[in-house]
Length: 118
Image (cartoon, rainbow, N blue to C red; front, side, top):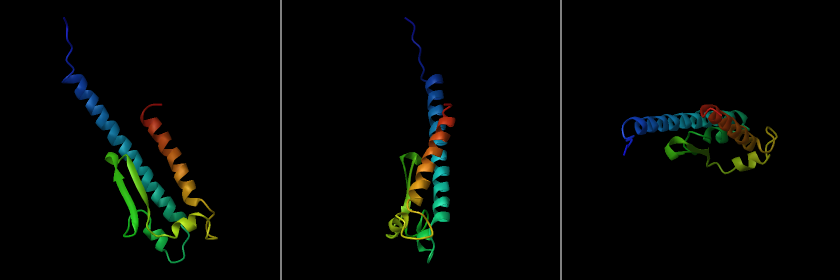
C-alpha cells in the first residue's frame, strides 16, 4: 500500500494560496470600498456639507469591516441622505448613490474575475 501524506508540501502550499487569495480579495474589496466612498462624497449634494462629511469615515458614519475584510458596509447615520438619494436635491438625480454602488459592484466582480484568472 502506498500512502501520500500531503501534510507538509501540498497542504502548506494550498493554505498559502488560500491566504494569498483571501488577502487579494480583501484588498480588492478595500480598494473598491474606498473608491465608493470617494465617489459618493464627490457626488453628494452640498448645502451645509454635513451629509458629505458624514459618509464613510467620520463621527456620523457607518464603516464596518467583517468577514476578514471581504465585506465592508459603509454609509451615514444622517437621516436625510436617503431623501437626497431619492432626488430631493436639484444638484443630483435620484439614485446617484445606487448608481455608484451598482457600477462599483460590477467593477469589483471584474477585478475578482481577473484575480482568479477568469
